Length: 194
Image (cartoon, rainbow, N blue to C red; front, side):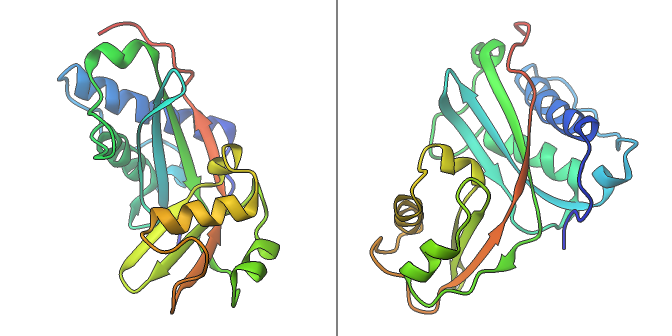
């Protein structure tokens, strides 16, 4: 399950603001405001990814694929986890003034039937679909935003398979494929020093 209603731009501003506020509070060693927002959509179960970037370089990207908690809590949780993304060095307080915070709210994933890579390439909607490849308990995903860096379906799928630890030239045996869309919201990326 997940957010079925389309979020308004005001909802998106609230989510991006919550993510940025969670990061700022943690860096400043201040308490995080955990009060629920007024919007019903933001209190409904939802899944999200939070991406932190500085000068175009990834500083963290962490999220959830399953809607297991209220969306606003999921965003705050993922913002905190993105600060310590194990793929990059932890975010520091010195980075705060130029740290860009973005939130992607995911639609519920739906099966994407494809028996081979050629079928998958033809069914993917570039710049629209996020893709999940799952085999047993292992899964890997690319958000729709990744299409900006990998606009070719072949390159997109190959990189995702490699990210998941599978060969990039074929679908893994028993692979489940799911697609989703995402709404992106940004906080602006210019902050006062702590």
